[in-house]
Length: 68
Image (tube, rainbow, N blue to C red):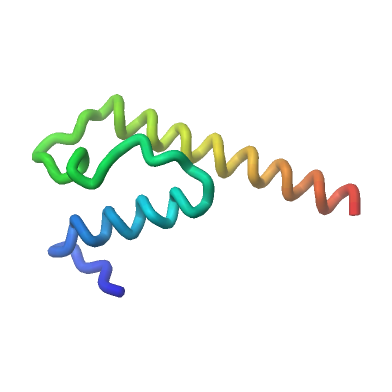
């Protein structure tokens, strides 16, 4: 698997697939990010969703560990 800067499309696809596999909804498409200036509000919404998902997952795991 390559993560070279010259392979933006492949790298973005890999990142979006990984995030979707973790349960983060894919609010953006690879094509949305390949344009010269991606929509900053769409990107921020996607990042906020990812952060919220990660925070909730971490809280759930801590609760599970505390109750074990």
